[in-house]
Image 1 (tube, rainbow, N blue to C red):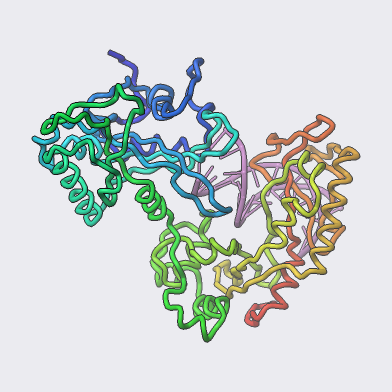
Image 2 (image 1 turned 180 degrees about the vertical axis):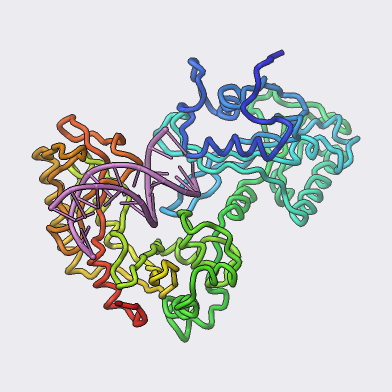
Length: 457
DNA sequence: GCATGATCATGC
DNA sequence: GCATGATCATGC
């Protein structure tokens, strides 16, 4: 018996989930402190149990976290395009014991007992990587809803009645809808006796079929379509429809909007703007399906009461070595400037109250992209020739392109603190940097948009 | 009041 | 514990 105290409450499903969610974004090999790192097919769940959850393995009929009734399932997903993922495999539940299952009732069956509440951990499968290099992407507690539960129950009954009819050897995954009986173990030795026939039957396990797993993943995805009725798309463009709905809220204070739209999230949250837009569109979920597909990014611009942007606009930090060696056509920056945006504009009044001033779709004009390319090229040249770095009054100065050098964009630090550095090609380090859109450039773009209610006083 | 270096807050 | 959207702080 181990006496060590677990870093989570193993009697409480929510706390197990909380602890498990800390895994998101990590590779298996970065998890735990066990010197002996081993993976292997089908072993990643075990790996987490030993290295992260610190409980003893069991293959008995109890759930993994039996005190909380939670069963751990670790399963791969794969990318099928930039923003779409799919299940790579079915999720295998418990082995079907042909001899015993015929005496079970659904409600207290071994299937329900062990798999009532699952802790699903999905990792991203990537070809060419070792098992321990995969990154964990989705962690959630999950239980089938009532309707699915009925179909799963019917599937279970179907499988059991086939066994009762002496046809365990004829079981097939195609017999059922969501819950399948998949083969488990490949060789002859895995064949088993069945109660009502002399015929040996392949060992099988209950599983959630791959497409059912897909539907689980889809439902975890919190995006919702903004346009439910296709017919309006025949009269107006997608952008017009969206703006019409959003711009109903122009000139409302954000405190009013919060009340009206029932928003409790803090304006400092990263996804604040996206949630605000979703709510304005009347959606229940937090992401807009069409925006995801079209890779439209929502960004906020806050204006001071004189109409000037409060800040420049930041983008993800770049890696010096990447900029140094990449070509413009496949650079990170070209993806930023060729993307479509929905800019949500806010303005402070003189009493520092924030008002919504409207949204507009935007993508960078071609002539401006050419200018950005020049800034990128200069950045690349400086990095390759060796960035000049010096200290002035405790601040780290450098000679990367400054705001004053270009109308559109510049390079500036972007990280949590200045110790957070990236390696330059010559081996020195410098605070992580990113490309920024100049506030003055954003002001120009707002001027050219349809927004005509911005105070300039 | 802007330019620029630095940092916060939150999510994953 | 870092990435990232957003914001702060200071000197000129």
